[in-house]
Length: 396
Length: 135
Image (cartoon, rainbow over all chains, first blue to last red; front, top):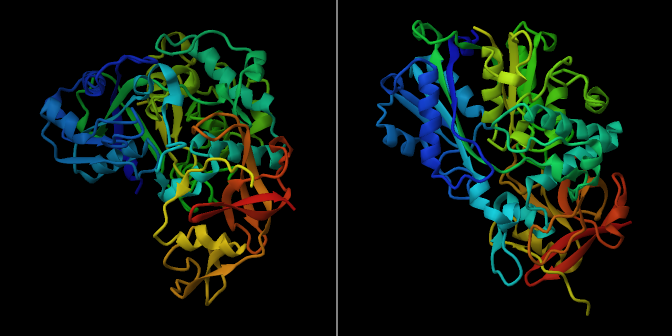
């Protein structure tokens, strides 16, 4: 039994999105939540479940802050089921879990949300405001950071850069190829009124901007932002009176078979999303050739390339030649990719932005950036390193 | 004595203390299953291969290769002065026996994947950080 097929995405909503909004995070969250509920043609009385990633956390600044309880209380929801947390198959693991909950009959309409205020929490100094201790500090590292901080590698940028570097070494991948992820995102962002960076970007811009951690330059790293994104995941047989045809969940991928680690993963060129992608295809008769649009996590550009390979849009190690020139991944190409501008240009809504865009594309609601068709099959994948979760969606 | 760079140090007192203090006698040690010989890193209470709990730190020869690296340019941490080379080094003794470290003793831009390296320790307080230099 493919349980996720009894789940649908009945509505999607998103708050205002900006580089730094300086707005209350719960305020953003209720905007997204009410928009999603309304989009589904439901009312808050219909909502009987909540799922969120990563739950309420104080650190890193702006990474979360709103958990299940804050949203439940703000909207006085009467819940039969809820779940929030970080130990999930990536950011979209919360949505996958919601699919399981409605499939199991624990709830009929689960409100899923992800809120970030990293843009304003980091303030005008940007990411350099995020500190990890320093000279004169008696702080000592423990947990995973014990293995990274002493060596001056506190950031996922460092860890994923080493995955990319290994890919460059094994397969001859180049910065000019990787650049296409960023350039494609920027081209699409130009057509997305909510995207943060919309000005044109050239290969020359990409190659001349400052390096962060080789092979990643600034434009390989996503843009901290403020915003909240929400979905209603509903039981397919409970949605007769929806406002519009629900997006169907064809298959999910949540697997992780290798070591759950940024640096101990067996094949750094694939990361954990390899297993999630393989599981997704094991649960459907559809194939990569059936996919009309792909919305794939780009916290760092290389992660998107790894998703393209893992999902079989090209062979293992062939991501570089596949995206070279950018034509295949363009909106009118073989597999339109990150049509809203991704996190690289539209802003780091942390996984949920990709699923939101996949839904808009399937509903034909993507405005100027709408892929012709509209598309019938979309894939959304989120997470890198030891995180990965993905959903294959079809137009209802 | 040369001025050592600032380092954030690992917290001692737990299952990893042997690792961070191992360099006191110039030897790098990893936890090893006494039954099947598998090296376990990071340290864990059980061997993931044969589920034995008979484990003990054992020295390795300190030689390995750069599995991958990044030349870090971003000033993430006050006191750490970029650019510097962060690497994942794989030890000779076992495929996949890796640790994150810095490659020192050569210009950071000279670091390459596959480069042979050997361990060197940087002593700070009660910690001996394992770094690697070209072999």
